[in-house]
Length: 66
Picture 1 (cartoon, rainbow, N blue to C red):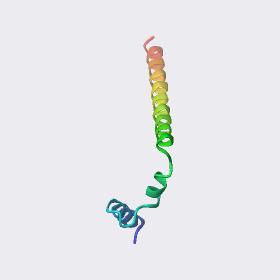
Picture 2 (picture 1 turned 180 degrees about the vertical axis):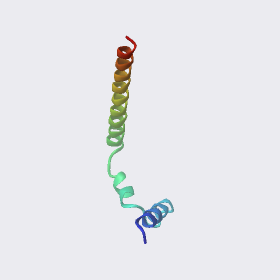
Picture 3 (picture 1 turned 45 degrees about the vertical axis):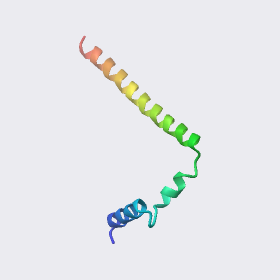
């Protein structure tokens, strides 16, 4: 079987819970607080990237308009 077919079948199996994907089981080993903190950190990092890009865009726009 090709890798894509194996991955597809593993995903379908995890949905109908015949053979859940290994990562599915590991996900629930973290506490709710740990998962919330990790989500907040990812969101914060994404927001920082957006602010930095917007700042660079504004800086570049002001320099080209002179």
